[in-house]
Amino acid sequence: MGLCRVASLAVLLGPGGPGTSHGAETGGPHVATITLTRADNGSAVALRVGDRLVLRLDENPATGYRWAMETHDDNIVSLQHQEYGPFPHAGVGGGGQRSWTFIAQKAGTDTLQLKLWRAWEGDSSITRRFTVTLHVRA
Image (cartoon, rainbow, N blue to C red):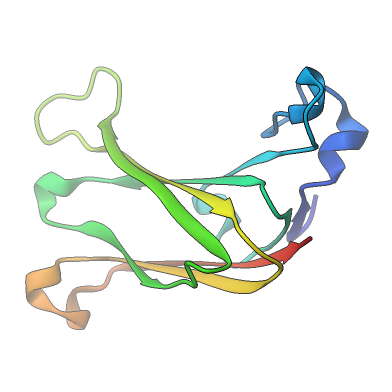
């Protein structure tokens, strides 16, 4: 699909298309859910107002390294929920996945930028970054 995922592509894929769900199935307005992972780092994503964006990144907080949001405009894409869950069958210190759920609020462009770091060690501890550009249309 290249570097640009287009939420409206969900309409072409029909119900059950990869990474999307539709409000139209229940008679509501078109609303897509787009799921991003580490593989989407550096990409651009097209959304419509009302679409849901879920970002999932691997993390092992037992090492002290955690993902933190560096930049993002909450007026364009608002953070609704954040959580961490261990991988199935992971032992103590085995790691897991942190996820963030956003809702596209208004038309505009936003850059989500996160860093994997040890907050108490400062920027010199950053081991990885994740960046995605979000283009939201009405």
